[in-house]
Image 1 (spheres, rainbow, N blue to C red):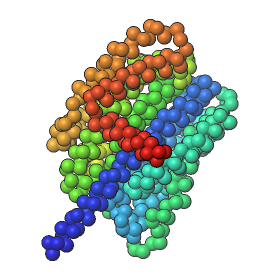
Image 2: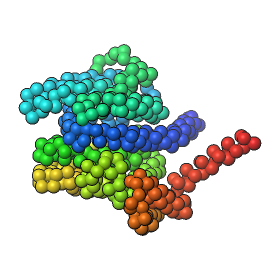
Image 3: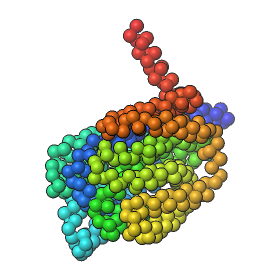
Image 4: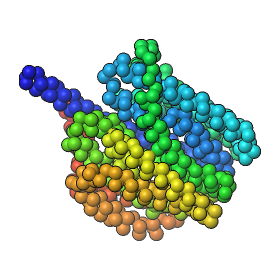
Length: 506
């Protein structure tokens, strides 16, 4: 009996270790996907911004922000709940199939109610009458998103499939952008392109879902067992959507389309930077859920420490650089007519630091620990804080006021979510010397600032190239000297590969 238990324990350890090896590949693939989220908007947004102008960009952003509410109503809290629950059942195809079928039924029912609300809004609101065509074109994504089942592929950690599929459709989206966006009247075309890649991903996902589940109904559906958790997570996601998009809606109503276009420009740059941090986080969520279930605190500590290090190596220095050189970044990406977004961009860049922490506290710990209520409480109160601040600040300061409201809201979320996982805070912050990251950033800034005077009359692209090479070169050189664990591991892997290739050539 003891021998069988010992063999079972050894087998479990081997399975855990084999999965652990795949984490680095998953993070790498998701980082590639994240970088593509940076690269593809960089390729297309400059073209679109110059042709459509702030007003054209603002119209599509305004419609998209409203559609976000109905999209979240259609999927409820299923993506987060489905990811967590499917991670537990991925070795049981029959149970997994039944779970997915039940969640899809809930999603389709919710989608019907979502479309009823949307149709009522766009056909009976005089304010939204001029946007009706955009709503029809972009509204198709609501249904496709509800059946897109991305959470199944994440639960199985199929990041190679997710990455390749996304890159293919993004490439097609880029081609369509340069073909279809030709003048200021190409607003419908831009609306279609905005939802094209994600909609195509959803269609492809649904077609390939049969590799993981069966659609044969083998027992009666019990939808009630999912409703409570789904609605709690839906409440959280809906509240986040409200205060993430309501600033855009309020700007559109109070300050006009031009101000929305300015704000949306800064928001896009901020979201790209934030995604550098969440690239690792989103990969680790199913694994952390698994370790929490099996009480593997040592594994959780290791994953959390690496998440913090990745943020300190990628998002933090990139945020500081863009904060300093906001003028050149906006000038290069969008043109001179968007330079009024500089102050807004700097405030939104400052939001990245609390957002890294709330992402860690909420997505990586509160939800896997089953503390959805704490997470929902935080974002619910945050929504009212954000709405109150927007009402006070937007009429006087426009996009800059909306950015200030967002920053204060994220500070609140850090405080409340952090209190909910106080027992884990020592795990998060122990064993990492933050001075090894902060000091190199300060040194990089001190070295690069005098260069601005020498290259101030150069082309914008040249200025960005010179300053970025010096800034990031100095930062990562300091990390090599400090022996930063992830940097050292990365260099060792490259060295081993080069040595292997050298031996093969011999």
